[in-house]
Amino acid sequence: MGDRWHVEVDRSVCIGSAQCVHHAPDGFRLDSARQSHPVEPDTDASEPVLAAAESCPVEAIVITLLNGGEPVFPPED
Image (cartoon, rainbow, N blue to C red; front, side, top):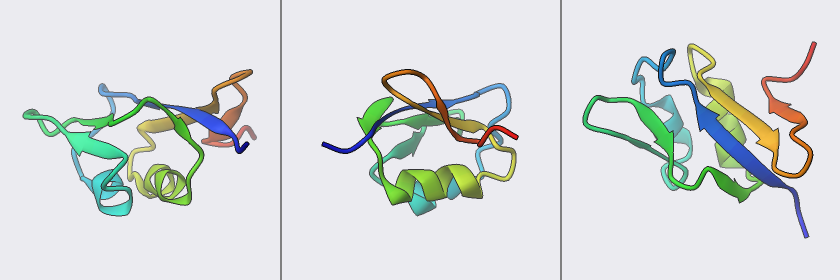
C-alpha cells in the first residue's frame, strides 16, 4: 500500500491562479470566490497533486503524510 497524504490549501494565501486545477483537475476545485480546495483532503499520494503544489505561485498548498504528519511539500529545509 502506498503513502496517504493530507492536503491543505491556505486560503489566506491562495490567489486563485488555478494552477492546481490545471495540474490535478481531479484533486482540486475553485469555489465561487476563486479559492482552491482539495477535492479529498486525505488522498493517496499522486504525482499530479504534488505537481499542483509545486506549481502554486504562492505556495498555498501544504502536503503532509497522513500517518505521522511529516512534510511532503513544501519540504523542510
